Image: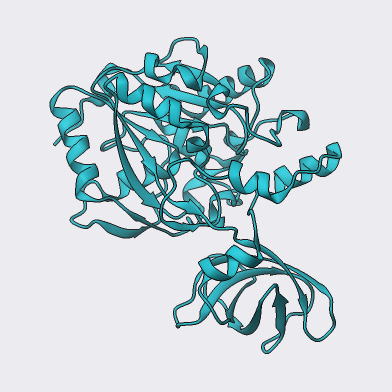
Length: 358
């Protein structure tokens, strides 16, 4: 079993990226081919690093402006919150709220909307509430919401005295190919892509397919159990349509490889590939020793310590998490930028890795 402390590493605070590279695809890219020493490139080099016939699978989920600020109707006190998902009953949401002494019946006023607390939520997130409101989440949050940036980016900006308009983050913290709204955190590996890079990939004969996984707040939850396998994995809805499956099957028939763009795409593919369904709730936890069913390689950012995302990347690397920690150490030494707005890693375990069983 993987001990959680094996996913620890020290990151200098200055390595946390507080804004994306400009242009997006100029972000640095650590290329890891099997057990060899890493190469250093840029995301814009992807069309040259992959082969004609390979396929990239993207998560087309769109990030909602899910963070909001309001005031208590009774005291006027400030309340900060995060929309998590629609509730089970019409006209309700599940939200996380940051304030003191919440109780049923309390109301929180937003811009052009009001939330009424009606019950504690039966959700993965402790402290979540069910609230009643008028209007759908997309409509209300479009007016009252803010970009749901991870807390570590906001904290890093405070430490550095940086101020960034929310309009900038709303553009930056969204992939250029986002479609269905539903995520409360970005599928960050996809943030590196530009229309020009997508055109270059098309011209190079590299295929594209999409899945949907609406990223929940649990993606940032650190592992607090002694071993990763004991961690209560959060649930997320994911979907893979027939067109995606057909694109992957055609690529395999011609000897192409399947590269997941981000851990959310990888999790969706591995959750649904052998299931007779297009959509499901997944709690899949991937750790070293996992038998990969469809993913041959992964484009991913550098992740938080003690995270299930690190465990997943380690499961794909020859040498596991020990190798991953060594690579992270090299990245820190070479000045790579970490986390959601940071640089990326392209994991290419080896040519033989693509020989999946039926």
